[in-house]
Amino acid sequence: MKKRMLAACSLSFVLSCGGGEPSTVVRGAVAGQSMTAADAISNLLQAGSQSAAGILITSVPNACPLIGAQQLVKNGKELDVVLGTQTTSGLMAPSPGSYTVYASGAVPATGNVASVTFTSRDGSCVATSSVEAESGTITLSHTDPSGYTGTFDLTFPNGAGHLTGSFDTSTCPPLGKKVPFMCPP
Image 1 (cartoon, rainbow, N blue to C red):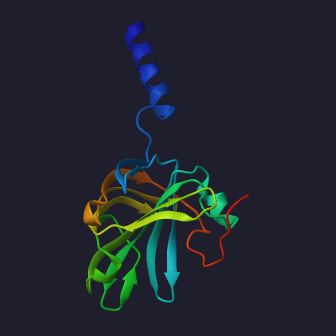
Image 2: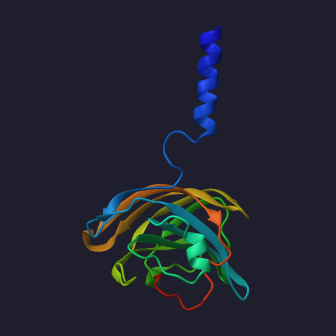
């Protein structure tokens, strides 16, 4: 009896501490570069009557304060995702479901659509590589005002790479604001 109770307590301790794989994971490589996810943030992006989800997965921790301070990712990598439902009257915020990834010039007139760009930056915040995914799928399993949860499977052009993974974002109000960004000291 004591052994079963100890096992149950140990299991609940591991679960409460978040044991196991992190909630945001990136597997694979683009342009020969792999990425270890350290943060995932999101925001509802709005332009007039249109809206879409913006998701940023970075190799740099604490991305929201960085974005809020108008600073670029330094010595890091990022996946920049925009997704929504394309209708004949514009783009609408996403709900749970599958979103097909298109290159920016190939988005269809209607349906669940997404675009994704992988960027790597050096110590001066200069993009050393920036590659837009040409195809793939993003599946949102949960959406609410606190963020988005889902998975992705992305293919990049000309054999540049393939990424899969999962994300669990937290909302970051500064994400998507059009302001000048600088490289942090």
